[in-house]
Length: 257
Image (cartoon, rainbow, N blue to C red):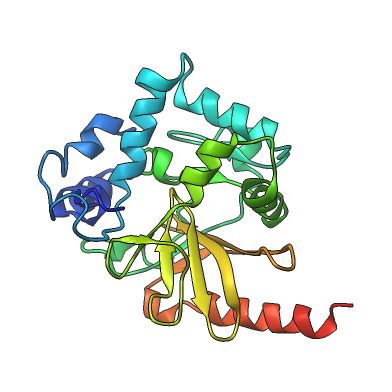
């Protein structure tokens, strides 16, 4: 997240395109070209969360890293991790998957999205997200995934795992060996390590689409994994996930034997 390329879904072009046709099957290149080749900051100079980076990684997987489609590669990884209720799509979920997905409601303030407020977003295309987040899963699968990702030995060889967990500070964009009270958050390759006075040091990630949020916390010292899903996407100041995680953690800690 230090490439300096803005997130395509933070642009007026994306807001207009989605609002006009939420069923459109949008090409990956179309999304990337909403921001690339312009740079918002000099590469390496600042931390900037950007979904564009995930789409660029998707393109690399399809073009250079494997001989399979991105969807096929994700399916292979899902199977190798032993996940039974996780599925990726680049557009619409097939009927057997779609009928299992609960309603997800839009409650945010993106420009031009007023007509979606309070509406179930599950029937619309996920082509706007693709490699940046169009996976559906369950809390159980996410806890299995987090343990395998951080502590397992089958998903990644040691060198790649070291790269995955190598951090840059979200405060300074410089390499960070470990988060501290003064520099509490470090971003790896799609994972975050944080320090919190009440929770200690833990691994974390939250993903969201227009009607859903999914997040996990993993505590290496205790091998505790907690996943929480929510079927709404409010503005950040109204999100209660952080407080909910703190309550769940305190409850488990108080009753763990």
